[in-house]
Amino acid sequence: MTRLTDTFAALADETRFAIVERLLEAGARSAGELADVAPISAPAISRHLKVLREAGVIDQRVQGSRRIYSANPAAIRAISDWTVSHRTFWEGGLERLAKALKEEETDNGNA
Amino acid sequence: MTRLTDTFAALADETRFAIVERLLEAGARSAGELADVAPISAPAISRHLKVLREAGVIDQRVQGSRRIYSANPAAIRAISDWTVSHRTFWEGGLERLAKALKEEETDNGNA
DNA sequence: TTGTTAATTAACGGTTGTGCTAAATAAATG
DNA sequence: CATTTATTTAGCACAACCGTTAATTAACAA
Image (tube, rainbow over all chains, first blue to last red; front, top):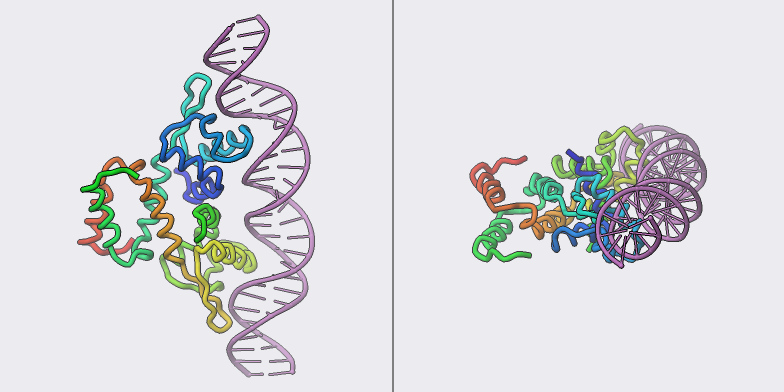
């Protein structure tokens, strides 16, 4: 189990956050396909991927000469769980969550 | 509007995370009352509070010679909103969320 | 106004993070 | 087998982060 602070540290960098968002929205991608998230060198991207991987935010699988990365659901869920554990503080009532849930049930569209 | 990466950066430090958790769980506290979250000097705590404040994670109000700090609901909500915006990725179905919500409705206890 | 308490700011040093270029590794291709 | 492509590792520089002690600011109390 990685600490939540490590997860936050991994997501605290704009480039890494952009990488994770890309993986969340577009699905698994190779290192090369993630190169355009920021105007930095390939080695810099590679190191960001390493940081994310070591924090457990993304997973890696090797496919030939490519390394395919994907977001780790558990990491995002851990963050969500933390906010939920304090939900009564930041959310006055249940209306908003209930409404969102209801919309999903009927709507069933994606983000 | 603060960027989410700034919020994550603020919460990426163990001491700052502990401060925020204390404020979330125990409510508003003065700087002095937060001193015991970590075995570090008062100036160190003070600077962490400044980082959290500048990131919009906590609010400060002055009361005589004390500075009273409190968690900013909007910051936590922003994190929650982000996870929710990607919920379909990390949450296979709605069962878990629906269950948690249902428990809250009847139970209504806190964390 | 003198002293005490609460908290911050200033100045310094050590560690960590992030970028670069160059080099290395490993698979795919001719 | 030589070359190209994909990606990482190595080594270096610079900026940011975090802790400390000393000094400062502000409110409170005698």
